[in-house]
Amino acid sequence: DGGITQSPKYLFRKEGQNVTLSCEQNLNHDAMYWYRQDPGQGLRLIYYSQIVNDFQKGDIAEGYSVSREKKESFPLTVTSAQKNPTAFYLCASSILPGGDTQYFGPGTRLTVL
Amino acid sequence: GQNIDQPTEMTATEGAIVQINCTYQTSGFNGLFWYQQHAGEAPTFLSYNVLDGLEEKGRFSSFLSRSKGYSYLLLKELQMKDSASYLCAVRLSNNTDKLIFGTGTRLQVFP
Image (cartoon, rainbow over all chains, first blue to last red; front, side, top):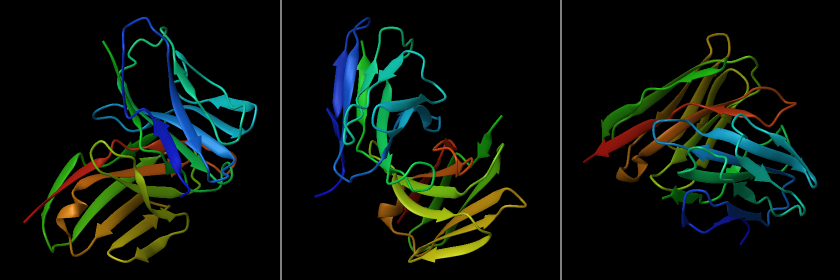
């Protein structure tokens, strides 16, 4: 089955620790995205990548980092510099950058204690 | 700045019709998306409008008026499983992947 997978579904970390969220897709999509969702707010774009080894900051990139070493993988690291890391994180992908529908993975709920 | 407005909550009865509105004021426009999101789950794609008019897809229809900065999602023959949040999102241009999302409308369907 083709799709986007994110793991784990729930993640708990202590304050001050970096944590990496996984996102994998086997849809052969070129573009991948990371969003953050907080209660009562819309999805906000953290980072996106249109091609391997290239990525762009979104609206709220501070305190986050990404890599795109393979087409199918786009991991997100939440660093200790992110002031309010507790949130629902969603990864998405689209066939082509800028011209296609984005499809979402199941999400990871990160709680920092 | 970019602004997308949707009602926060709506309620409706099973079997009825409901219209969820979305107004936008953005620096550019290259299409409007509607997604459905059940609590704790991923958004799933419902519809895409880039030209004015109505797009119908089964029980769901979406309308766009670019001159008014306005869209609506129409859900017919409501079912209990339609209880979810409905997200409106605008793509700013065809040179960017950026989608600007509204805060979503939480729809509750009652028997």
